[in-house]
Length: 238
Image (cartoon, rainbow, N blue to C red; front, side, top):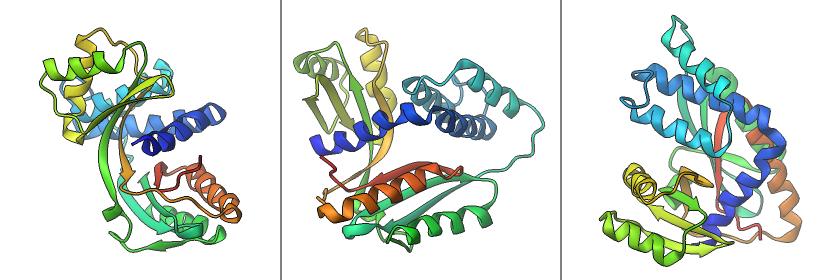
């Protein structure tokens, strides 16, 4: 399970260099979630989830408030949720989740990013069957035994609880996200280093050394696209 955390850690560690892009993407995600239902996280679970994720990235309140206010207004911006799948250098597998108001822009941009880095897009389902949707939390300040006890007392089912890099990682089914989070909050956990529903690879691969630069270039190119919200892969970069 440790390798799964490495992928998330890698993503979290790189966020500080791209805060403006990340904030902009969260603004869109918050707007879309608020527009789909009530612009109130207490009655809109999708919005509540996005706001919880935004906290782990320190998204400013002004950006959050602006996105929610926009959703309350008469904006006619319509976004579609899209998923692209493909193969990168060294046989790596990649999933790209996007939110876009222009499908004709997004698909060619994603395809171009793949092609320029020695990869290629696949058809729907060609990669995702090798990944599992997973709720994952990372917390500090609690021991492994304490977290296990918290989950047992709250009667919450989890896939795994491990200690890694001075942090306790909790993996659960996606529909257990709120239950895990609430159990931790009830036990006094106020901050989360990680709070995500992600796609985790069932098996991780180690790339040949010569393939690593092209792979990293591809991931960077995909994450830089304005419509791309999340990029998942099956590569162990340790």
